[in-house]
Length: 264
Image (cartoon, rainbow, N blue to C red):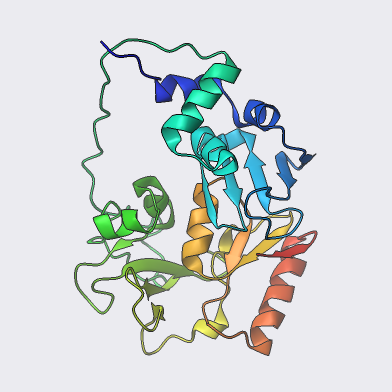
């Protein structure tokens, strides 16, 4: 039998904090995260690289990519996952093992969970036919669990057909609309119901807490950043920013007591 590295065991034994040291990175710790410039993409500023130990994940705002500790090492070393795992295994004390690889059984659920507060007449009913594990969704870099958390998924029918349907909530968490995000560079990138004005809301505002707020380009980037351990992320829903949207953002920061704003 040939030897291989047990990726699952490796990720359990080598934390992203240990990887910071192994990779020789000089990052600063604040609010439970490690941040600093990314030595690879050299863009995104001096806080572009974010390590979140609680989720054992990283995210780079410069390259807009993230993942687990193996993906972290692969990003910094600019190599594939197998080479990154070998590096972590060798320097992290992980022993190579001879064994048969096992596959994880997939979740059979193919619908997003329904909203809990069904009695709220102001709230739209969730689109229960959305597919969070569709191949087009995976191609965007999203995990099924991330889509289920946001209530998003591939729409096989309706006005969002062929797109990633993403729920939009107001600041109180009430579902008010869906937007359809292209999965193959269609124009426009986002579509909305005719009676919805995308400039009237800040996406993901209902999840904002008292901390630094990060403004991203679109809802997909918010979902990807959250998936990779970045909290307090929002985006606008328009290609161009209008003055009333800036007022909405300032009001949100004031109401939630956000310390500062980072543009990424």
